[in-house]
Every structure is written in C-alpha cells, then in structure tokens.
Length: 71
Image 1 (cartoon, rainbow, N blue to C red):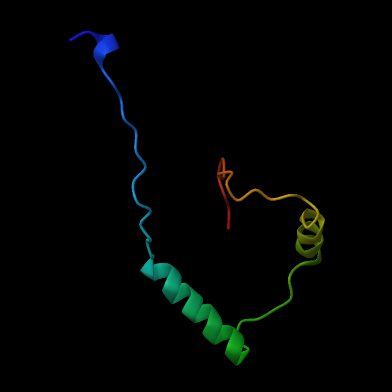
Image 2 (cartoon, one colour):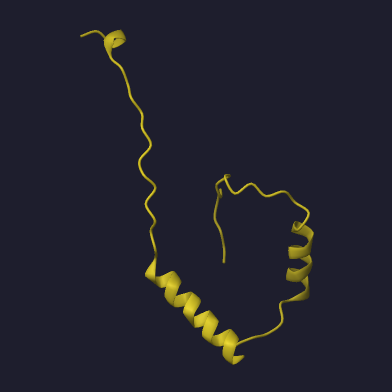
C-alpha cells in the first residue's frame, strides 16, 4: 500500500461531563460562610479597580488560558 492510498478519518468524541468533588465541597463551604456571614471582608481597592477596568474588555470563552494562573 502506498501513502497516497491511505485515508485518515478524524472524529470528535462525545463531550463527557466531569464533576470534580473538590469543587463541589469548596462551593458548599463558600455558601455556608456567606450565608452565615463568616470569613467575609472587603476586597482591596486596587483589586476592585482592576476588576472594573476589565469590564469593557471583550471576552471569548473559546480562547484557552495560556501561562501560569495564580489564584
């Protein structure tokens, strides 16, 4: 068989929903803290200003995140 006789078929697999149990636990912890008023505080002024500055920027959720992300 010659290389020009070969055919390649590419298919996309079914999207599978993956739930991370750690995320669910973390969100439950946040919900409990917020509803009980625990561990709440104001955001630093500089962070608030930076967040407001990004409100006018277009966001494309299809674009991946590049580089390190610090949370």
